[in-house]
Length: 199
Image (cartoon, helix red, strand yellow):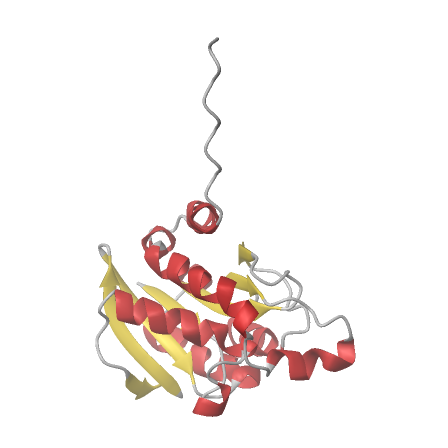
Protein backbone atom coordinates (compact mmCIF):
# COMPACT_ATOMS: atom_id res chain seq x y z
CA UNK A 1 0.00 0.00 0.00
CA UNK A 2 1.17 3.53 -0.81
CA UNK A 3 -0.01 6.75 0.80
CA UNK A 4 0.17 9.82 -1.46
CA UNK A 5 -0.21 13.09 0.45
CA UNK A 6 -0.83 16.43 -1.22
CA UNK A 7 0.08 19.38 0.98
CA UNK A 8 -1.94 22.59 0.96
CA UNK A 9 -4.43 24.69 2.86
CA UNK A 10 -8.15 23.83 2.87
CA UNK A 11 -10.75 26.28 1.59
CA UNK A 12 -11.55 27.95 -1.71
CA UNK A 13 -9.57 31.11 -0.98
CA UNK A 14 -6.35 29.07 -0.98
CA UNK A 15 -7.18 26.68 -3.83
CA UNK A 16 -5.03 28.39 -6.51
CA UNK A 17 -2.15 29.40 -4.22
CA UNK A 18 1.41 28.30 -4.99
CA UNK A 19 1.39 26.57 -1.58
CA UNK A 20 -1.47 24.36 -2.78
CA UNK A 21 0.18 22.64 -5.71
CA UNK A 22 0.22 19.40 -3.69
CA UNK A 23 -3.58 19.50 -3.50
CA UNK A 24 -3.78 20.28 -7.24
CA UNK A 25 -1.63 17.27 -8.14
CA UNK A 26 -3.55 14.74 -6.04
CA UNK A 27 -6.89 16.09 -7.31
CA UNK A 28 -5.79 15.31 -10.87
CA UNK A 29 -4.51 11.83 -9.90
CA UNK A 30 -7.88 11.12 -8.23
CA UNK A 31 -9.76 12.32 -11.33
CA UNK A 32 -7.61 10.55 -13.88
CA UNK A 33 -7.36 7.21 -12.10
CA UNK A 34 -10.97 6.91 -10.97
CA UNK A 35 -10.49 6.89 -7.19
CA UNK A 36 -13.46 6.38 -4.90
CA UNK A 37 -15.22 9.21 -3.07
CA UNK A 38 -13.36 11.06 -0.32
CA UNK A 39 -14.12 10.34 3.32
CA UNK A 40 -13.31 12.74 6.14
CA UNK A 41 -10.81 10.89 8.31
CA UNK A 42 -7.43 11.54 9.94
CA UNK A 43 -8.20 15.29 10.07
CA UNK A 44 -8.38 15.38 6.29
CA UNK A 45 -10.00 13.94 3.18
CA UNK A 46 -8.85 10.45 2.20
CA UNK A 47 -9.83 8.32 -0.77
CA UNK A 48 -8.83 4.92 -2.05
CA UNK A 49 -8.06 3.49 -5.46
CA UNK A 50 -5.70 1.29 -7.44
CA UNK A 51 -2.89 2.33 -9.72
CA UNK A 52 -1.61 -0.68 -11.59
CA UNK A 53 -1.76 -3.62 -9.19
CA UNK A 54 -1.17 -1.55 -6.06
CA UNK A 55 -3.66 -0.16 -3.58
CA UNK A 56 -3.13 3.57 -3.15
CA UNK A 57 -4.54 5.98 -0.56
CA UNK A 58 -4.60 9.72 -1.23
CA UNK A 59 -4.79 12.14 1.68
CA UNK A 60 -5.39 15.90 1.71
CA UNK A 61 -4.78 17.12 5.29
CA UNK A 62 -7.23 19.76 6.55
CA UNK A 63 -4.96 20.82 9.40
CA UNK A 64 -3.48 23.64 7.27
CA UNK A 65 0.02 23.36 5.86
CA UNK A 66 1.92 24.07 9.08
CA UNK A 67 0.30 21.18 10.98
CA UNK A 68 0.26 18.61 8.15
CA UNK A 69 2.12 16.08 10.27
CA UNK A 70 -0.81 15.64 12.64
CA UNK A 71 -3.05 14.33 9.85
CA UNK A 72 -0.41 12.24 8.06
CA UNK A 73 0.89 10.83 11.35
CA UNK A 74 -2.58 9.55 12.26
CA UNK A 75 -2.99 7.85 8.87
CA UNK A 76 0.52 6.34 8.97
CA UNK A 77 -0.07 4.94 12.47
CA UNK A 78 -3.50 3.53 11.58
CA UNK A 79 -2.25 1.73 8.47
CA UNK A 80 1.16 0.87 10.01
CA UNK A 81 3.02 2.47 7.11
CA UNK A 82 6.80 2.70 6.87
CA UNK A 83 8.37 5.99 5.67
CA UNK A 84 9.09 4.50 2.24
CA UNK A 85 5.34 3.88 1.83
CA UNK A 86 4.56 7.61 2.13
CA UNK A 87 5.06 10.18 -0.64
CA UNK A 88 4.58 13.85 0.24
CA UNK A 89 3.81 16.19 -2.69
CA UNK A 90 4.71 19.80 -1.94
CA UNK A 91 5.87 23.13 -3.30
CA UNK A 92 9.59 23.91 -3.07
CA UNK A 93 10.95 27.45 -2.76
CA UNK A 94 14.53 26.34 -3.36
CA UNK A 95 13.73 24.96 -6.82
CA UNK A 96 13.25 27.21 -9.82
CA UNK A 97 9.59 27.50 -10.88
CA UNK A 98 8.68 24.54 -13.07
CA UNK A 99 11.51 22.30 -11.86
CA UNK A 100 10.72 18.89 -10.40
CA UNK A 101 12.69 16.54 -8.13
CA UNK A 102 12.14 13.32 -6.19
CA UNK A 103 13.95 12.83 -2.91
CA UNK A 104 13.89 10.40 0.01
CA UNK A 105 14.58 11.85 3.44
CA UNK A 106 16.53 15.02 4.13
CA UNK A 107 15.93 18.37 5.78
CA UNK A 108 12.99 20.78 5.71
CA UNK A 109 14.54 23.92 4.13
CA UNK A 110 12.38 26.04 6.43
CA UNK A 111 9.09 24.55 5.14
CA UNK A 112 6.79 24.45 8.18
CA UNK A 113 4.67 21.68 6.69
CA UNK A 114 7.75 19.48 6.32
CA UNK A 115 8.87 20.38 9.86
CA UNK A 116 5.52 19.15 11.16
CA UNK A 117 5.82 15.94 9.13
CA UNK A 118 9.32 15.26 10.45
CA UNK A 119 8.03 15.69 14.03
CA UNK A 120 5.33 13.07 13.46
CA UNK A 121 7.00 10.66 10.98
CA UNK A 122 10.74 11.19 11.23
CA UNK A 123 12.70 12.50 8.22
CA UNK A 124 12.78 9.45 5.93
CA UNK A 125 9.52 9.77 3.95
CA UNK A 126 9.66 10.28 0.17
CA UNK A 127 9.16 13.77 -1.26
CA UNK A 128 7.89 14.97 -4.61
CA UNK A 129 9.24 18.53 -4.79
CA UNK A 130 7.70 20.97 -7.26
CA UNK A 131 9.62 24.21 -7.67
CA UNK A 132 7.74 27.49 -7.30
CA UNK A 133 10.85 29.69 -7.18
CA UNK A 134 12.00 32.04 -4.43
CA UNK A 135 10.86 35.69 -4.42
CA UNK A 136 14.47 36.72 -3.70
CA UNK A 137 13.68 38.35 -0.39
CA UNK A 138 13.09 36.30 2.74
CA UNK A 139 10.50 38.81 3.95
CA UNK A 140 8.36 38.16 0.88
CA UNK A 141 8.23 34.36 1.21
CA UNK A 142 4.91 34.26 3.10
CA UNK A 143 3.06 36.38 0.55
CA UNK A 144 4.76 34.53 -2.33
CA UNK A 145 3.56 31.06 -1.31
CA UNK A 146 0.04 32.31 -0.51
CA UNK A 147 -0.32 34.10 -3.84
CA UNK A 148 -2.23 32.51 -6.72
CA UNK A 149 -0.32 31.16 -9.69
CA UNK A 150 -0.18 33.78 -12.42
CA UNK A 151 -1.32 33.27 -16.03
CA UNK A 152 2.36 32.91 -16.95
CA UNK A 153 2.83 30.27 -14.25
CA UNK A 154 -0.07 28.29 -15.69
CA UNK A 155 2.02 27.60 -18.79
CA UNK A 156 4.14 25.21 -16.72
CA UNK A 157 1.78 24.31 -13.84
CA UNK A 158 -0.86 22.55 -15.92
CA UNK A 159 1.57 20.48 -18.04
CA UNK A 160 3.46 19.55 -14.85
CA UNK A 161 0.30 18.30 -13.12
CA UNK A 162 -0.72 16.36 -16.24
CA UNK A 163 2.74 14.75 -16.58
CA UNK A 164 2.77 13.65 -12.93
CA UNK A 165 -0.74 12.16 -13.09
CA UNK A 166 0.01 10.45 -16.40
CA UNK A 167 3.17 8.73 -15.13
CA UNK A 168 2.25 8.13 -11.50
CA UNK A 169 2.20 4.35 -12.07
CA UNK A 170 6.02 4.45 -12.21
CA UNK A 171 6.16 6.07 -8.78
CA UNK A 172 3.68 3.57 -7.38
CA UNK A 173 5.91 0.72 -8.54
CA UNK A 174 8.72 2.24 -6.43
CA UNK A 175 10.73 3.56 -9.38
CA UNK A 176 11.23 7.14 -8.16
CA UNK A 177 14.17 7.82 -10.49
CA UNK A 178 12.38 6.36 -13.53
CA UNK A 179 9.25 8.33 -12.65
CA UNK A 180 11.17 11.61 -12.27
CA UNK A 181 12.99 11.00 -15.55
CA UNK A 182 9.73 10.25 -17.41
CA UNK A 183 8.06 13.40 -16.05
CA UNK A 184 11.08 15.43 -17.17
CA UNK A 185 11.01 13.87 -20.66
CA UNK A 186 7.26 14.44 -20.94
CA UNK A 187 7.75 18.12 -20.15
CA UNK A 188 10.99 18.49 -22.15
CA UNK A 189 10.95 15.98 -25.02
CA UNK A 190 14.30 15.62 -26.79
CA UNK A 191 14.62 17.58 -29.99
CA UNK A 192 14.61 15.38 -33.09
CA UNK A 193 18.04 14.87 -34.59
CA UNK A 194 18.55 16.55 -37.96
CA UNK A 195 18.64 14.10 -40.87
CA UNK A 196 22.12 12.90 -41.78
CA UNK A 197 23.57 14.36 -44.90
CA UNK A 198 24.88 11.39 -46.88
CA UNK A 199 26.00 13.45 -49.87
